Length: 139
Image (cartoon, rainbow, N blue to C red):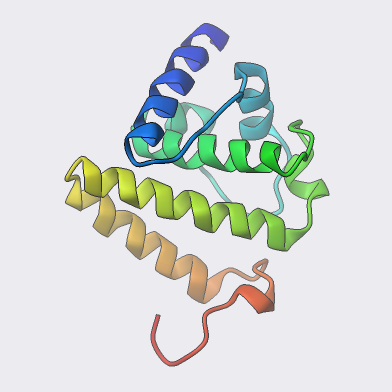
C-alpha cells in the first residue's frame, strides 16, 4: 500500500505544480498517519476514498504539506494536537487548491459537488472556530 501511496503522492505533487503550488516532502508514512489518525469531526472520508480521487488527493496532500511547513509533526495525532484554527486554515487552503485543480481540468461537476459540501461546512460545522466563520447574510 505504501508503494501505491508514493506513486499517487508524486502524481498529486505534479498536479499541484500545474497550478503553481509546491508540495515537497510528504512521505507515504506521513500521509498514511495523517489520513488514518485521530480527528475531532464526523468526517467519513476514508484513505481508500482519497487514494481513488485525484482531487481529494490534492486536498489531503496539500493539508499535510502545509502542516509540515508549519513544523507540525505529521503523526496520527496532528489534527487533534494542533490548534483548531490551524486545521481549518489548512483545510480552506486545501479546498482552494482542490477547486483550482478541478477548474484546471474542467471538471465542473466536481466543482459543484464540492462547493455544495463546503457551503455546508461553513454553515453547519460546530467545530469551526467563530473567528473563521463567514460574516454577512449569504455565503
